[in-house]
Image 1 (cartoon, rainbow, N blue to C red):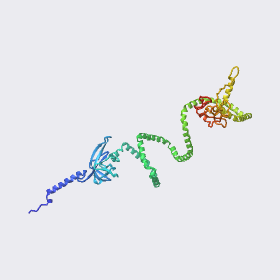
Image 2: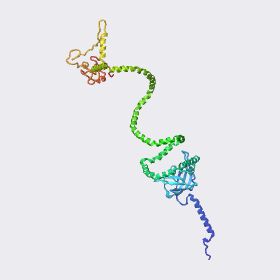
Image 3: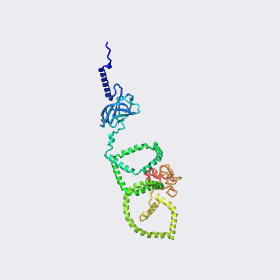
Image 4: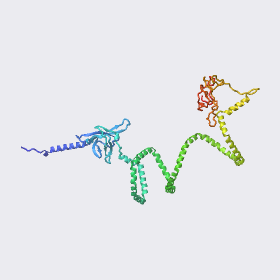
Amino acid sequence: MRPRASIAANPVLIGAATVLVAIVGVFLAYGANNGLPFVPTYAVHIKVPNATALVKGNDVRIAGSRIGIISAIDPEQNPRTGRVSAVLTVKLDKSVEPLPVNSTVIVRARSAIGLKYLEIKKGDARRGVPEGGTLPLSAARPEPVEIDQVFNTFDEPTRTASEENLEIFANAFAGRGIDLNTTFATLPHLLGVLTPVMTNLADPRTGFDRLFPALAQTAAAVAPVAEQQAAFFAGLDDTFSAMASVAPALEESIAEGPESLRVATESFRRQAPFLEKTTRFFTGLQPAIAAADDAAGPLGAATSRGAKTLTDAVGLNRRLTEVLDALAAFGQDQEALTGIGQVNALTRALGPLVDTLEPMQLQCNYPGSFLRNFASAFNDGDQVGTWLRFSAILTPTGPNGEGGPSSSPANGPTLENHLHTTPYPNVSAPGQPKACEAGNQYYTPGATSLTNLPDVGSIHDAPTETRLIGSGAPTPPPLGAKQ
């Protein structure tokens, strides 16, 4: 019986097994870019603004560790803005699932020759992206800076400027070794003093964290006027060139600047009350200045005419000199002073009389009425003689009527049979109310009045529905009464 041959001794079987192993190895190596077969993955879609230099099979990493690959790259156009972005389909390890929805991504360079990978920074949200879900375009931040963009910043004008700066800085440092040594020697003291300063700046109450965002906003605001600013700095070059000729005087001014500032500080402290009062003065003057706007035209005309008037006033002033000299002599004349004193005594003596007669004329017009009637007594008449005008009033009849003897003032019983008289009416004399009561009282039907009115103001505020004695006609309102 022949012994069986060993498989290891059969070269055909060994060659076939070797070829099979090589084919499996090549297949696995080729398919490794799309993930190993039979290994479960977690697939999601990630949107990025630009997929430049990304290819299928590039790594996906978290904190530098490879956790998946990019399996597909597809373009996508926004229908509203028309902007084109890229949608990456990535296959991640199951250990990453679920990826928090607030995670961010960025395309980073893997080497200087252009290889890229996708880096994911996991968020802290509890909700995750489901299988087949999508991270939006807003998650792709910050926007990466490509190496060609960095190199493009060094264009010819920038290179020329850098060369000029290097030359200028070299000349600035040349020959200043002693100054540099002194600076480095004082740096330890400076840094020691700098510690409390930086501690104060780090305090949240200083708001220092808002400084650089504010500077960024300022830079964004002035960016549209960059050309004007460039022209401004070019103009400054001309200005400083012109100032070079007066450099010694400027140096002296700068040297005396601290003392000037100290003196100015002291003077401003003393000027503060004056400035405060000046501020209040001009604030109160603003309405007058606004009113002067309307008066500017007349004031201008008056000023132009006043120039001629002032010229003519010179001669008037010469003539007034004589008048003033005469007045001065009159003021020194003893007899004139005695006469003026007597006039003053007469004025003081007539004061009570004038105080009594003044309201009689101003309030009641008694002197005017007397003179008018007195003149009428001599002017009205005929060849026989003159006469006085009068009006007859028919008095009502009844008990205590005014037409005959009575035991008491008329007080009814009819509506018209009531006596209204004031023996001593108010005429605004000293101690009396400012009113002319006589002839201005309203007749109140059904009431008897023999005294002054209790409320003098009612003379001008009484109702107009009043009637005369023995008449059915309404009494006309007195002079000055409200209708």
